[in-house]
Image 1 (cartoon, rainbow, N blue to C red):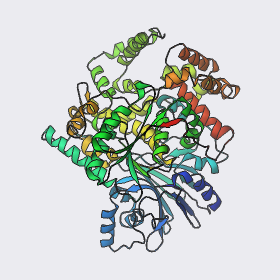
Image 2 (image 1 turned 60 degrees about the vertical axis):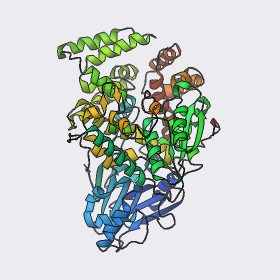
Image 3 (image 1 turned 90 degrees about the vertical axis):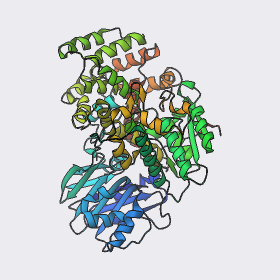
Image 4 (image 1 turned 120 degrees about the vertical axis):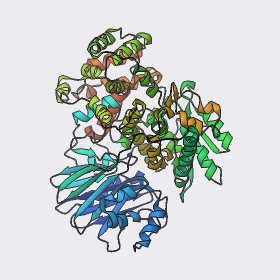
Length: 637
């Protein structure tokens, strides 16, 4: 597990720039560094040693040293790959997973990615052909940014590393900002900065003689496959989860698990307990506000499996972490669950170097209640001619403090949309109407040719799923999962030099689950129908069948109390007012309405994160990481 960086050019790259980039990635790899430089390429890395701790340094080379690679991630099937490559005559200098990459490249070229089972962002330089290959894992667990200018390409695991060496190119991309305000994250291939892009999940990039090509090599197939019975499918689900968990428990460093008390993290802990000879170390985090606190459910699972369990509590004072979060995330990121995610990673790192989690269970087995909600709405067939009228009435209903009227207006607006746009509205932080009211004339003009909802519509049109439920899950695998959830986990764990592993994101498990019938996933109002059936003997009934809570925070309350003055200061001072992006009077109105009881928490949080990011990286760039105090957390056990 590492941070990687590099540059290729028709001219000679600057080694000083490479070292500067790697220095900014030190938190991703505190255990070592490595560099390769020739006349046209420079590759570097920072290492977090987990496998082959004593001998697995990078870069790695083929036998002739004509192929060199750096890589961030873990390849879980590396023992099988090594045996096969040895039988083909290759020799190895290390005992880890990294060296497999260069030999796979010799055998298969860019098709090497199809042989990898795990998470990765990798770079392979072929000195004989002067060709660079970049690749990102199938679902986007590991990040990769790049900048292609004048025949030179620079890449890194984090945007700040590119930002630091592209000093004359720090300018906000208004289209990226436009999409961020809709989705709470900047979706690939955009980055928040003009001229810097993200390599999308499941994609390859090749560079040769100044020419860049990007192609997708993998997409999850949701086309239906036959299933003999629910019982057989439940047994297969258990088998897949056990195997995916077992191969993710290989580590030479201490290992544990995040345990939220939800179905997915509990299932992973149950699977770990079945394949481990020692008690599993588990870590939970909660709040004093009972509406957001899941620790009691985590305790039930911890007690059932006799885990070495540790709990922590976050209060509003923990928001002192905001400057550190802005630095680590590189881009504005408005999912407030990043706060507890950061702290559970920070405190887990005191005891372990690797932590398994439950990410991906919702997208594979149908865990979001919005899937059932949208399926119910599909039953109301509204003639397209009536759509404009429904949208108009929905917007005209009183936008007051009344939650009832607000929900009624939203429901009518949703009925007046296509299925794709209904889902986009469900996923929105700012709706198109809200953005237009917020934007200055300049930003309206700069984004007039861009429609954020088209991104989800394109994902719908690209899906091969036969049912609406599976289609929604396909869309999430291509949007919300890599854009939000996986970014949050990667950044918060790597900020603390902790490796996160996700058994539910094993591509073998995902490919099998994707082709299950929709009724095995969402049945009526029951989500995760098959997974809950499969786990009936593993987990207590009250854990399996309680309402989904999610990893939320009491954000609306904080913004009316402890964070009220901070939000007002950040969003209405002269610096924020003069940016030219947002109308100051619109921001003030949102603050006042929120204080009076109308919920603008998500929108205000998104604006705050953008403003904090802008001050950190654009106004007066500060490349050193700010300290992240753990004082606001109380250790329970």
